[in-house]
Length: 133
Image (cartoon, rainbow, N blue to C red; front, side):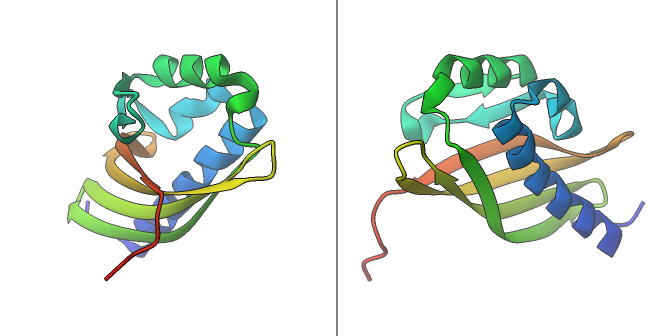
């Protein structure tokens, strides 16, 4: 099945849904966003790789109040790699309990599944200093 504008829109909504589900603690709905065997690459935070949706849920619950109050996703770009796979880059903004903010880049690999597009691999890269040419 060829990659369509509807696929692009579905991926944009999928990336946004992750923040909504995370912020409301609806981890039981992560199946709407991630494959069963999602690889969540947190090596830039010295946290290694989390594998599987249960590992994501457990990590979020363990962080407790250290989780951001809000996840915001913006600047989404989608590049089809085959008819059934795509790469997406987006910016994530987090608002923390103490009022501070953080910025990351998400690099995602997405798969078309029988139930829709899902993130199979996510790499999170923190932005810690401005660009210096």
